[in-house]
Image 1 (tube, helix red, strand yellow):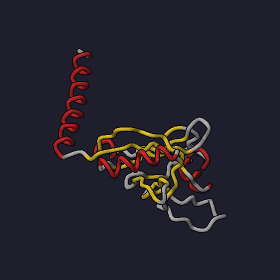
Image 2 (image 1 turned 120 degrees about the vertical axis):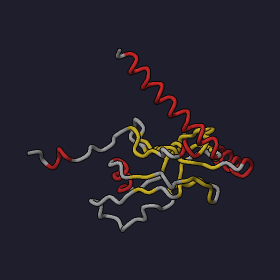
Image 3 (image 1 turned 45 degrees about the horizontal axis):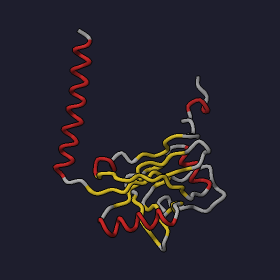
Image 4 (image 1 turned 45 degrees about the vertical axis):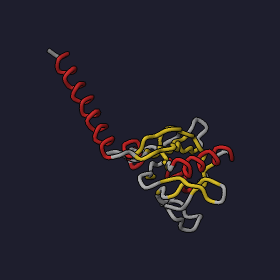
Length: 165
């Protein structure tokens, strides 16, 4: 019989902790920037356990600084040293002032959106967010992407079946 320790999901020490799969479908992603993320201790533990969601997240400027809004990082159940935290609280992004100016300028000038693409841990174990400057896709663009993806899948299937004969 397996022990409880063997059944637990391993913690993420480096690599992707959360991925926004919908972002590349809904938006055309332009420039991509890696930003640091200000987190509290239990939030880091939850991220390492893979308990985060970027599906409703977006980034924006507040008081000259960039924040990540709507990112859900679940509560760490074992952490009781802090009061209950809001799982979707705004989290500060660590960017240079020049980067903040460029991103806010693009959102006001071009009507772009700042979308978080993924949260990952770098080699030093620090949480980083990949944010992209994005413009929304039209419905016909999404349909073309679906058709292209289906064709690639069918083409791979045909090649695989032909190679086996």
